[in-house]
Length: 90
Image (cartoon, rainbow, N blue to C red; front, side, top):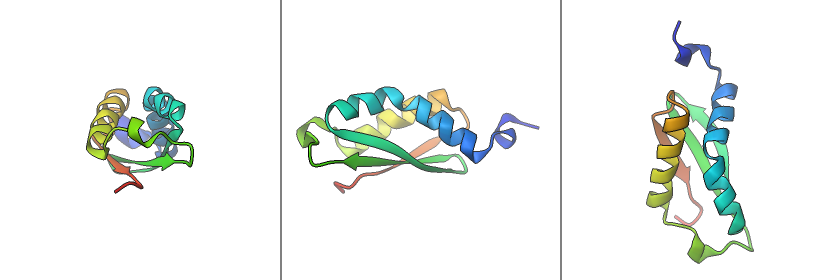
């Protein structure tokens, strides 16, 4: 049995949360946050959370952030091969 089938959805979500922590901490300093909405197959769904205190000029564009997240998450969680970012600015 492979690691992919042995890992539960809950475990994958936890692994994705750990993998994106450095970016999450950086965003929190600018008043934003990230949350894992779920993992569907090999795709992690991540939500960008913006608050009233968010420095909007400090948050990189969606495509850039999605690329950074994809690199961090796929490196830390090999079972995940893609990231979809839900960005309220779009």
